[in-house]
Structures are given as C-alpha cells and as structure tokens.
Image 1 (cartoon, rainbow over the protein chains, first blue to last red):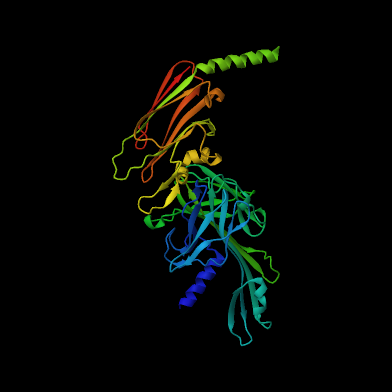
Image 2: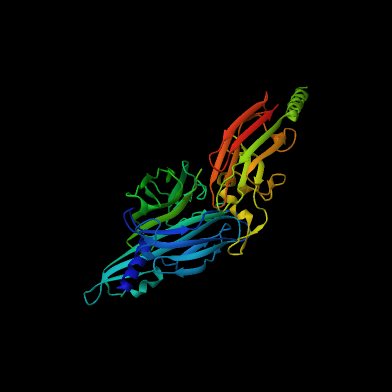
Length: 270
Length: 177
C-alpha cells in the first residue's frame, strides 16, 4: 500500500496537475530577496499538498532537482532530506544574481497488453523503452514534460538563469520574478518549445488556503505573444500553474505530449 | 555666443542652487516592547518615475552582530533587504557602505539631517518634482514608509510636514532657497 502510494506521488510529480482543485506540487523557499553578501543561504521545502502551502500529502522526490546559478552554471543542493510530509534542501548563494530552483521531469508513460493478454503500465525514460516487450499489443506511449520552479535573488537580479532552453513549456519573465509587489502588475511570457504559447490558461492561487473558504483562483490567458499580466492583490506566496496536453511528442515512439509549468512566487508589500 | 549664453545661464542656475538647503527632522518613536532593536532607516529622494535621484541616509548595523541566544554572528547587512522599497530601488545596486550616507543605527528620538544645495548629492539634483522617501524596518517589529512630495529647487522657504503611524513619528522637511 505504501509502495503504491509512493508510486502515485511519483506519477503525480511527473504529470503536473491540471486545475486548482487537484493536488498541488510546490517548492517553497524560505525567502526570495536577499541582501547578505558573504554567506547567504536559503532553505526550500518540496511537497505535494491539497492546501497551499502546507505539508499534508506527500514529500516531493528530489531526484530531478536542478538549481541554476546567476552565471548559468548548476548549483548543488545541500542537506537534502525527505521526511513524511515534505522534502527539504538548502541552497548556498555564493554569487549575486538570480537563481532558478527547479524540479524537472521529462518522462514517458506506456500502456499495453502483454503476451498473456494482461493490461500493463510502464513509466520510464526514452533510453529505457527497451523494457517494454517487443510483442506488446495496443501499445500507447505518451510523453510528459513538467517543471516545478521557484526563484531567488541575492543582490541585484539578472536573467542568465532564466534564459529559456527552447524545450517544453517555459516561463520567460518580462517582470523579474523577484520584483513582485502588491498592487503592481507583473508581466510574464509563456513559451512552448521556444515559441510563444498563445491562449494558454494560467492559474494563480495565493498561499494560506487553509485559512479561507475558497481557492480564490486568479485566471489569466496568454495573448498572441504568449504574454499575460497579473496584478498581485496582496503580498504573500503565490502558486502559478499552466498546462497543455495533446501536443506533438518530441520522442518518435510517443503519440502525444503533456506539458506543465508550476512556480512559486513571493510578492512583497509596498 | 549662443554657447556662451547657455554657459552663463547654467552658471546662474548653479549659483542659485548654492544657497539652497534641505533640513529633515525625523522622529523615531519610542516603542515600549520587551525586545527593542534600533530600526534600520533609509532616506532617499525619488523621481516621478520612482527611480532614485539621491540616497540621503542609510542607518544600519554595518558590523557583524552576535545573537544573544545562539551566539551566532551574522553581518548586519543581512537585514538590509527588509527595507524593501529602498532595497529594490537602490540598495541592491550599491556597494556598501555608501560613502557619506551609511551610518550606525540611531536611538528613538528626533534626528536632524541637513544637506547643502551646493554639495553632493543635492548639487546635481535637476530641477523637478520629487518625493523625499523614508523607510524604517525594525527587527521583530514593524516596517513603515512615509513620503513627502517637494519641488526642487525651492523658490521660497518651504515647510512640509508628514506623520508616520507606528515606526515613524513626525517628519518635518524644511527647504530654503
């Protein structure tokens, strides 16, 4: 049972939820704007929960954690720990600028009927496709690309770590992701494989859902340029998500691709 | 000739600025709490587009501080980003300490700052509309921002008042042409 639930959490992590009502995966940084130059640290929690930002469902696996420093180079997480309800890790910010902290999932799901006529499911990556028996019938492979993100800035922000890779569903900030203030509009741009992702539905939910009776979801739609703007109603931590399905796959044997982007943003008071 | 006239006008403007001065009286209220730390304070002049025309004062703990409970030392600059607006508009672009601007934290009470029009940073302040900005953040306490709009240079002596509600007391700005 425990194994099954763990598998479910992993599957959840790879697919990215589609609506504000689903389980929410998140990275929660201890702070996002830092002034200390000499020895700056943050700590980050990673979890799947029903409520933002509380730990009440599952810890997130940290296997695909990718931290990009202000110079574009990878930064190693320290003190990684996975507990009952959350995972956590520390990040040592050794140089000024903006860091992107992400969990990057790029996987495949397959369903097929094996030689004995039994329905089977398989999950893995492109290089492990050989695990599926050659005589599998009704084979259906779908590709899933999702990222879970948050951003922190030590000193002056820069955008080296925010440069889009041109793969998957990505957020290209127009407003710096650590320059968000209550009552001010912020503008972001979504890209699908490096091109503007137009008519994409973007969902934003403020943290603290346990202490109110509605999700109070803010919904925006991207324009022809892939851009949308949001005026933050109040200071706090916000969870932003967008997803796409039925997109052409980038792996030959997969029939379709699902994509997701989730980020946690901190909005500061005026 | 035209160039010379321009030069003379500039010179004339320069001399009128020379006499101008700005006097700021800032009250840090006495706050009765069991754990009181002197606040971090930033005072700056903001342009209409909210960019910073001049930093006037920055009071913070420049040295490392030792936490009474844990004994751990931390640089006082760690908390500068709690002056959120100043940090965003100016602090994060600066190399600290700011020459002639940075200073130690100050106790509760009235503090006077005087700036001469012919000296930096006012000597290079272009004529226009500005806001004097005061931001105060106190460890385990509150944060407050008070702004006082003014025009530069003043044509007549001007006295402007503002009042904070918790971390800032009475603010008085005197402009002399």
